[in-house]
Image (cartoon, rainbow, N blue to C red):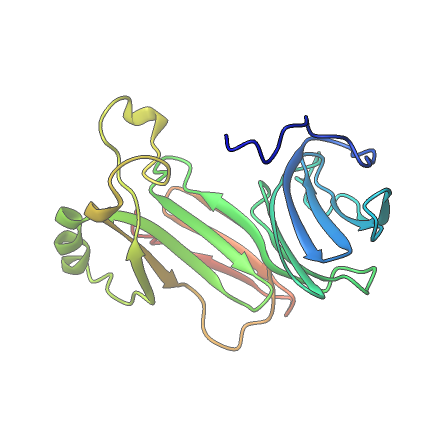
Amino acid sequence: MDGEFEEDPQLLCESKHDGDVMDLQFLDQDRLVSASSCGAVTIFKLKSDCQALSVAHVWERAHLYSCDKAPCTAVVCRSPEVVSVGEDGRIILYKADQTEVLRVIVWEVHFHPSNPNHLFTCSEDGSLLHWETTSASDMSSLLQRGWNNRVMSHSGVQPTGGDESLGSTWLTGDSSKSRLEATHMLPSQTMSVNSLDVLEQCLVCGTDGEAIYMHTQIPV
């Protein structure tokens, strides 16, 4: 507007990228990290004169479903660490100077099949968590049912009407009128919880300790 920039932007360099670029962040002054819709996390090397951009390393299929690739939806960087999240429900930690995945923080995520207000996650640290969004009016009934061993609470979301079959208190509504609660469902000192499944009031999960745990009275 003040005449400082009078020329059109000019292309300095480019590089091939498999899949849509879902997120892009600087790792440092010389490197960029991208999240791909094909599930990959890629580090690009940028020359100091910005005249060349090349692939330094790719973590192929970092995010995936059991039968296909899952989009990597976001990355966050603090050199040398990189963290990615994806539609497979996993949070993954990498180091830029290592070719292997450093740690998978969350292994699997499941919505309850008939009540999408309830979400279940299992993690490498041995956690099995039951997440729920609740409106203020629902809190008293939850406490009456004895479900008060909550470990986390902060603003969530709630529906604002419309088709409840699309059921997503996670995506729409006024965050000031509801809460997000999390409950630990396994004893402490549990090894990595690698997989889970939910059906009505039953939940089953398996761990690195060659153990299978089952809950038969999930409060949903």
